[in-house]
Structure formats: structure tokens, C-alpha cells
Length: 259
Image 1 (tube, rainbow, N blue to C red):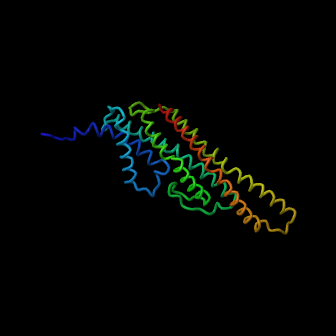
Image 2: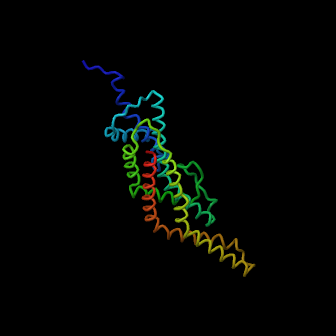
Image 3: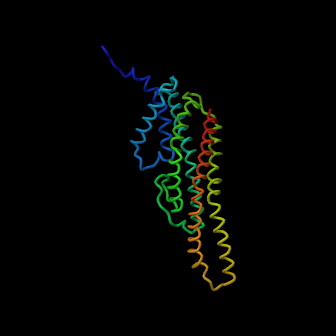
């Protein structure tokens, strides 16, 4: 007679529980997956589905769930997953930073929209660029690269009780420099153009004091800024492709730093 008990399912629960924590942490912090439009039930279901695909390929784990070692291991999995999600999130933060710089020079920093992913107000230029980058990220299969990196992370950082190394956190901090570096590189052509325009308007104001610089300057800056913004859209896709390659290389450094 076939008899089932909770104790017989405990090895399976213990084997699938730890990968599930890491996958769920990635889905809660990574771009696209952490959008508030996606319900928590959907995120948990996707994490469970991906865990069912990854866990059978992993070695057995001897860590007990209801123990201090289990608590420490669970915190490690959550920490690794959040670090991976934040590293990929730098792509979108860099583009938003570029949009803020462009909007500030164009005089559109006061026009803001509520950002559901960041939970704060975002300038309209940043909102437009964030939408374009999201579409390009999906076009370049960035979400699939993230899932592949997540599956590889279980080989680089197996589930164990040993603490992660501090070099991974240092690599994460160093990877965050791409926010300012790449954001400034993307916004620099428009910022330099509008700076030259402001210098020209200042010279004209000195030559013709009767000219109202505030009446002419704002529509001129807005018009030239929109034209320049439309021109850099041609280079946005190659720029994002190189940025994705750089971020996933930084992600590999973060994972190798944890081991």
C-alpha cells in the first residue's frame, strides 16, 4: 500500500526552496520583471516555473531549512539575487540619468511623470528614453540574457553555508559607475549643443539689451533640443547594445567576486 507523508516530501522541498529564493530575488529587483504592473502572484509563479527548470540540474543541498544555517543560506540567496538584479538595473538608471541632464538643459525638468518602477517622479525626457530603452532591451533579448546569467550563477555560486566574499560588493559598487559615465556620454552631445546656444544667447543679450532673452531663449532651447534628441535616437540602439555587453560583463565580475 502506497503511503505518503510530509517527511517524504521534505528532501524535494529542501532542494527546490533555495533556488526559488534566488530566482524570486532577481525577479523582484531586475528590470522588466520588477514592474508594479506585474502582480506579485505572477512574479511568484514565474519564479516557481523557472525554479522547476533549474533545480533538477543542481546538486543536492544538505542545508536544513529550519535552522540557523538555513536562515544564513536563505539570506545569502536573497542577497545574491538582489545584487544581480541591481547590476542589470544600472542600464536603465544610466539612461534615466541622461534624460534628466537633457531635460534640465532644455528647460523641461519641471515636466515630470510618476515612475511606477522607481516610485518617484521622473522628467518627461527620462520617461520617453526609459520607454525606448525598455523596448530595445527586450529586442536585444536582455531578459533572456538575465535568465541565462541566473542559471549560470548556480554553478558559479553554489548553494552552501560558506559566506560570500566582500569582493562581490566592491565589484557591484564599481559597476555602478556606469550610471554617471554612460549617462553623461549619452547626454553630452545635446548638453554641449545647448551650452553653446546659451553662450550665444548671452552674447546676443549683451549686444542687444532690448532683446528679451527669456522670451526667445526658452522656445529656441526647446526646439533645438528636440531636434538634437531626435538625431541621437539613431545612435541609441548601438549605444545600448554596448552598454548591455558592459553591464553583463560587470555582472560576471560581481558573481566571480562572491566566490
